[in-house]
Image (cartoon, rainbow, N blue to C red; front, top):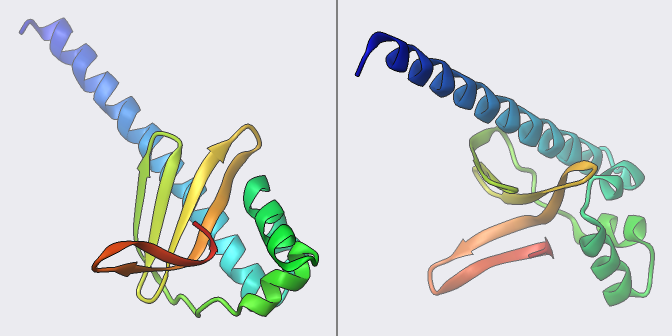
Amino acid sequence: MDRSALLVSLVLAALAAGCSSSRDAAVEEVTTDFRSAVSSEDAEAACRLLAEPVRYELELSSGSTCEVELLDVRLPAAGDIQEVAVSGTAAQVRYQDDVIFLGEFGDGWRVTAAGCLSRADGPYDCQVGG
């Protein structure tokens, strides 16, 4: 590989790494804001961070507003973030006792499932969305 091709490869790799870390940071910020809103019982702020289909599902299943239903769910205290994984327009944030899933939409990252625990025999069991 000649020197200019090597330089182009290194620049592209650095750009890709920068994009990845900024996407991870954006996902982490939304998740942190969501958890903070839930823990301070600011259901209005938390509901704004949910993906629209998740808000709709909460309201439809309960016959109430997203805000009322989200406070009734009692999501687990999540603690510190253990891992952030972003793949395309989907992301997963792992905490010690919780997993939150996100999707990237036209208006940014939104929570698509929260209060999720893995099950040995199947998919995650989520209290919200999923």
